[in-house]
Length: 143
Image 1: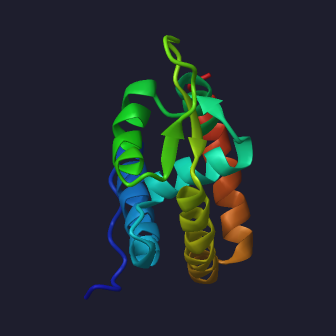
Image 2: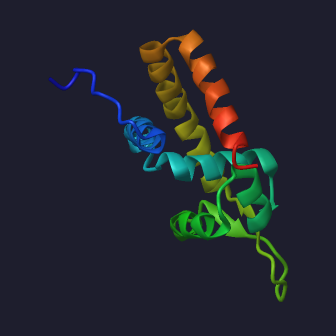
């Protein structure tokens, strides 16, 4: 019964939230050996690409509200994956990956790729392309 297709809701929002929960669960399970969630991996990956970044700039880049980002940063700072490199007395925090954070990001990248491949195998490359296009259109509704 687990593989039985479930009837979608008449509510687009509910359908998207359900799909998002499933995708998040898949990524979190694939990333579990690294000890990271997909949200934490995304932060590390963006900081790896950006180098140092302010919390505000990182929030804009990830497209996440600042409060949620700050909450997600705390566990990463607690295990020394991220460090605040801003000068003392400044109000804006400038974040950077530590060597430990870079290593953790590299370790998790292979697991993230496994999640990407798993989803592409299940949905097919063409459907992934359509999904990506639709999601971009949906995101632009909020612009």
